[in-house]
Amino acid sequence: MNEVQLRDSICRFGKSLFDRGLTTGSTGNISVKYGHGWIVTPTNASLGNLCPDSLSVLDKHGSVVSGDKPTKEVPLHTAMYETVPNCGAVVHLHSVHSVAVSLLPETDPADALPPLTAYYVMKVGKTALVPYHKPGDPLIGDAIRGLAGKFTSVLLANHGPVMAGKTLEAAVYATEELEETSKLHLLTRGLNPRILTEEQIDALRP
Image (cartoon, rainbow, N blue to C red; front, side, top):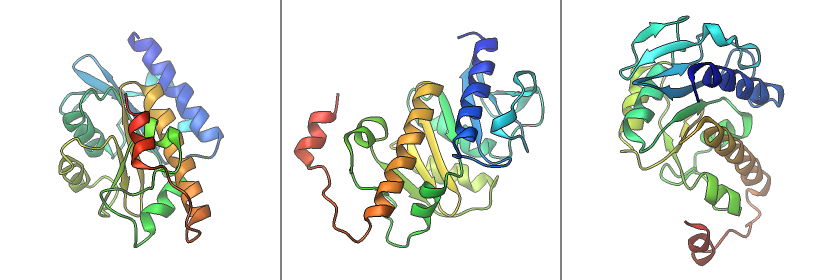
């Protein structure tokens, strides 16, 4: 995609996420790799009402090249691009069910959700949970770097999900799958749900 197409894609996916209640108000942010840097949504912007011309362009270090002031969550985006192999886009939301899972004391930091469905395994894999930090805190980036690129899906405790993908479409679809799996997990919590076996999981891997 060229720059105009990437900007339009960010706005289109942002509106789709907003319209379906996966983010509210001015929460959430999206970035896409472009050239030697990336394009990201501005600070205090609603994903439901983005303007292509106001998106921020950053270099590979997260410094502003052009556009409006970027989201304060630049540190987490930078960390994902630096550590996750073939990362082409990052989506960060405050989607309700994913946030709820991040609040539960029994959530495993190395495997936050059970393998309930085939599509969770195929699109997400495993999800890590990192400790709470104030939104925009550079320490969020350090926590993500501490995962050494082993996870494309990360829950920020008491905050929300962060998803990396080879493309924006892949990152958005994986984020949606994470939210649906979080919802299923909460609905079946304490009911001893049947999860996929290791053999079934292995059969889903490329």
